[in-house]
Each structure stands twice: as C-alpha cells, then as structure tokens.
Amino acid sequence: MAHSWIPQATDDGSFTFFSETFGETFHSTQGARAEAFVKFVKATHLAEKATRDRLNLLDVCYGLGYNTAAALETIWTVNPACQVQVYGLEWDATVPAGAIEPPLIQSWSPAVQTVLKSLAEQHVCQTDRLQATLLIGDARQTIDPVIQSGFAADAIFFDPFSPRRCPQLWTVDFFQRIVRCLALDGTLATYSRSACVRSAMVEAGLTIGTIPMNDELHPTHEWSQGTIGAWTTAGLHPLTRMEQEHLCTRAAIPYRDPNLTGSAEAILSRHQQEQKICRRESTSSWRRRWKIT
Ligand SMILES: C[S@@+](CC[C@H](N)C(=O)[O-])C[C@H]1O[C@@H](n2cnc3c(N)ncnc32)[C@H](O)[C@@H]1O
Image (cartoon, rainbow, N blue to C red; front, side, top):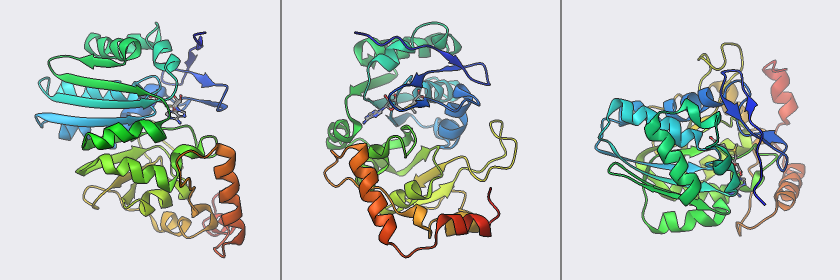
C-alpha cells in the first residue's frame, strides 16, 4: 500500500516529511528548501559551474528531490541552455511520489515541477536539456550501474539520514564506491560535520573542507554546517584547527561495511568494538579543550 506522508512545515515555510523508520525529519527543521540551496547547491558552486554547456549531478538519497530541484533552478537561471544529466538514488519510491502533492511541489518553477513529477511517476525524465534517472533500491547496490556507465559527476549531493540512524550509507566502503563517480574537478557536499564521516571521506581518497557557518540558515555560533569533498584543495575552506583535532579523536573512527550489505546494527556494533580498543583521545576531552558544550 502507498505510504501517505504528512507534510511538516519548516522555519522557512517549506515542507518536509518525518520518517518513522529512521526517527528523523528528511531536512533541517530550520528550513528544508534553504538547506538544499545552501548546503548542497551553493556548497558545490553550481551557479559558477552553470556557465558550462553540460553538467552531471549525482543525488544520493533523492528523497523529496529538493537537492535536484534546487540545483536545476540554479543552473537554468544562470544558463537556460545548460544540458544536465542527473542520477538520483533512493530506497523508497513513495517519498518522491509524496513530494509531488501540493503544497510541497508548488514552491518550484513549472519546468522543475515537470521534472519532479516525471521522476516520481516514471523514474525517468528526458527533455531537450535534461536526462534524469531515479534508481530505486539500496544505494549501496544501485550505485553500481552508475559507476559502470562511467558517469563523472560535477556535483554529488550526499544526503542520507544521520550517521547514527543510517550508518550503512556513511561507511568508508560506500564512499569508496561513490567517489568513483566524482569528476576530477567535481565536488561532493554533505550536511554532516561528524568526525567519523570526515575520516571515511578521507580514507576514500578525498580532500575535505568545511562548510562554514554565518549564512542565512545559521546566523549564530555553531562550528560548521557540513563537509565538502574533492580531489584537490582548490576552492575548499580548510578545516579549522579545532576541526582537525576532532579527526584525531575516538569519534573519528569510521564506519565499515566491507560487503556493502551489513545491517545498521552490525555496522554500529563493529564500530563500537573498534572504538573500545583504540588509544585515541576521547571526544569528551576534545570538547572540554575547545569549550564545546
Ligand atoms: C535525509 S533524507 C533525503 C532528503 C532528500 N535529499 C531531499 O532533498 O528531500 C534520506 C533519504 O534516504 C533514503 N534512504 C534510506 N536508506 C537508503 C538506502 N539504503 N539507499 C538509498 N536511499 C536510502 C530515505 O528513503 C530518504 O528518502
């Protein structure tokens, strides 16, 4: 039976859903739409890249399609002729289907609404300037045909539920698959600033930078709103010393899933074992040292 999702308003007036399975909302409650624009589209410099003739996007955990939608709005505002290819990976087809109901769909332009509807209903969208495919299933497996096609993404939006709730998608092993789809000058963006996520990205071969605060989403004193991964440091905001030291603590032991089939429980329990025997500084002592409450 189709799941009926109940729209929940976020602080910028846009809507999100709440997942009973993962116990989390799909977006920051500070603003679902703003999150897509700030943490994913702006962080991957898509407005600047949109002057190119073509762009490739990989949307990991497509969900309601906000990151793809915000990217297309941005790209076609700058360059209406830009040819875009998109792969979206999503486990639950009822989520994109729920997101094309009013009022959710109404915040997007007519052209982008057409794309979201086609992806939700047919899982493909082909127009004179877009080739988009939504692959339904576990992203740990649906990434394979994308890799095999030789896809080189200019931007990867990496947006699973939080590491503790969905560790399967934050492992070194999954990042190693994902980075095979990243173009040489491409950028991966995620909202997570967790040390275990950052160290998994580094172990997968990426250079990482921080997504600094002081923007429209977080006017106050948090220390980062996410992480950027790329093959080189060009255009990255370096980690602060505090963030670098975070990567030397116990919190930076990454999740592992060598066969890409482990359950959340198995991955968390293996991780706990590794943390227990490691000799690194505890994360609470790092917090005290940097006066993080
Ligand atoms: C935080 S939400 C993504 C929000 C989305 N990017 C958006 O803008 O609406 C996480 C998504 O990951 C999906 N998901 C969970 N486990 C997955 C898996 N193993 N493979 C692919 N998608 C998964 C969930 O169904 C959910 O839609």
